Image (cartoon, rainbow, N blue to C red):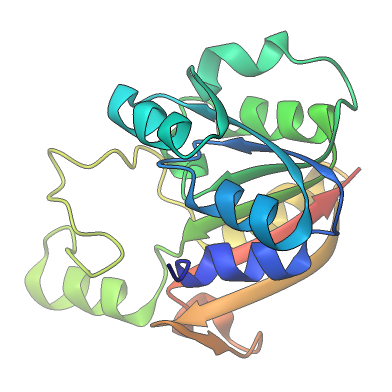
Length: 195
């Protein structure tokens, strides 16, 4: 099974034999790949009961929980990596979630859809309505995305908090995009962070 492009970037960047917490792990696709390819000790936290059941049926260690309330229960520096993929924009307090990620893990991967992509901008400009795209498929009233973040917003956010960006990858469609003008041309971003 092939991974979603942002998850493939993360899987290729996680060191073998490390401990990983995947927050919002979905059905455990990334965790399974990390376990099978790299001998990673992967644990997961997922809000959706169906996804938890699917991950557990793959032999993965996943518990049902909410990133907004349950990350506080994890001890400091208990993982080498904490991962939050396509989940940051769905949390009530992204700043608190990110603080917990960087407290729990020595490093954190964060990926999110870029709300400043040119198609999103064009849709707002031409139609005057919230856009529906491949990466943002829900209508405004049923989207889980409650914090619309752009690449430039995120860069300013981490810089203002003294967080170091160790790596950044950008995707246009399913292909990697250049970092130049990523805020306009990338649909998705992946950042590797540390304190």
